Length: 325
Image: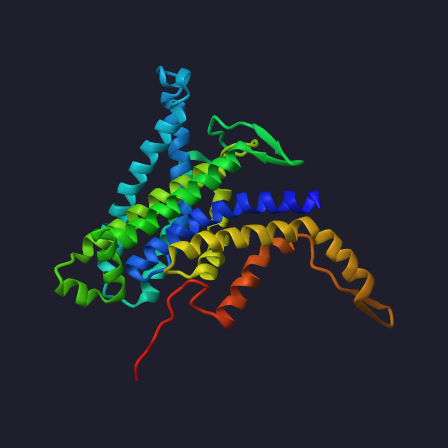
């Protein structure tokens, strides 16, 4: 039972990371109806920026002795990446606005590939430490270990999701973003400037991705490296599970994917043993015994995504699309 709870807690912590990344997908999709494959690069650039700022400032001013250097570096990186997201939308995505959606999605895929190579050319492929304040600090609660960085990540994901939910539902700008996503022409007729909406969507998504990248690279001996990008791909099933236009869905989807993936990883060897012992056949000299493989937990989220697309393509909390004929 202790192992189950431990797997569950670590899954929630991992799911909080997926939720942060999924929130970026949701923000852009709600504002532009486009799935942004460059979200992983935003994570990577944001984390590398924090590394550079900490290395440059953290050892040279009084902020380090007060423990503030990391948080100041993170705030600066969020601001820089938010502005970068706005700039990328204006320079690359805006000229493609009237093109087919597939064209825009492929443009984001191109941004992801190009951005990854730029990161490698600047920072290389070796893991780099963030010098974060979390370290390996771990708490033990009811026989279960939980790290400080996991606690901070869960709090950050919940806080950001709540703030975005309030922003979309209570603010004029959030209402304008929802209106633009629903019907851009009608929104323009009401005096809403779609350029502001689209740019803000990309800016917010880039800022959130920075938080996700930093949390993913902090504590427990973690480092910044290009291996962060595949995490963004794992967050796509989380966004689709919850609903690509649902902030609440991104949070729930991230937690569900994180927990199920971690539980599968924890019990995968036992499942494999049972399959080997009970499912198989022999034909002549050929013997087959069923099994999931060594890294089945890595593909498990995508199986969940396929199931959701088959039975509820708009997600658990997503808005069903109604077409009139």
